[in-house]
Image 1 (cartoon, helix red, strand yellow):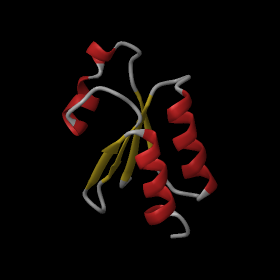
Image 2: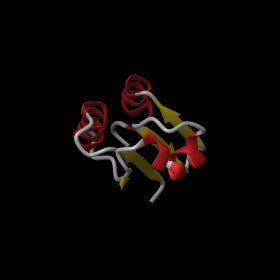
Image 3: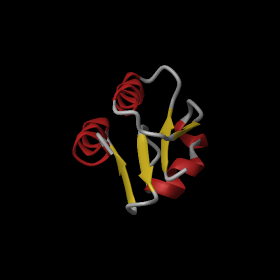
Image 4: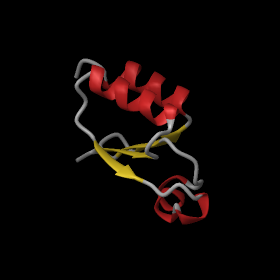
Length: 81
């Protein structure tokens, strides 16, 4: 799968990104992360930080965090493909 979303269960920002991806019928995989920042080594490895959500688009070579940035990217780049 070329799009991966790192998310935390119950995170409202992560839910916003999930909703946007779903609205635009984007195929993606979700990697659920631990609640403790100190246990988010995989998120740190892919994005350089431990906060979520993080979206990785392997096809386009894009890794981004911050839900507003991700939502904008979904609208501009992934919608209606």
